[in-house]
Length: 170
Image 1 (cartoon, helix red, strand yellow):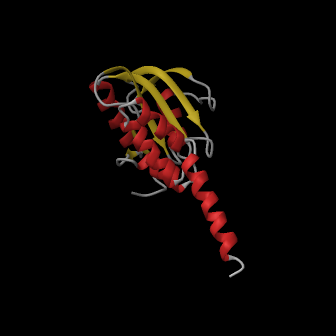
Image 2: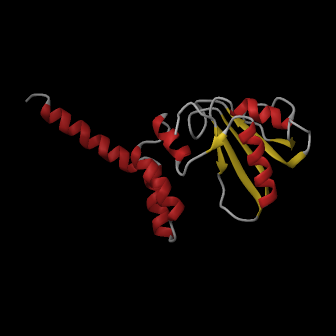
Image 3: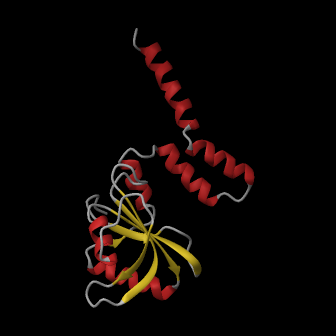
């Protein structure tokens, strides 16, 4: 796992779907996205595009592309997202082209790890994200969202300040 690599993965759930979200994160994500769509995409504007293999011009799929410039992205890096059809054939085609263009498959949790390393999330929020994904009840969802919003982090920071205030005179 190298911080400077451009990584990719499906950000939405696995399996067949009408729409699946594929994410690229890292220094080459915007360059790769622009190669796939054959034009420059405007930051934070969803663009209806046709993704093509730059090698032979074959169509990968049609869908939406959105770019997020660092640091205003989930990972704190340049990010490109593609909202495409969630078929196995589209995924295989896309992954082959992304690999050939220099990106590598993300390891499990690597987008969140990059967000943590880049100060977009703290450890409690990263754990809350996992809790939210695994939530099966309304109460679990509510607790995870509160933690993701920083409630636990704020309490811990308050304790830290109190301990420092007590320890400083010592």
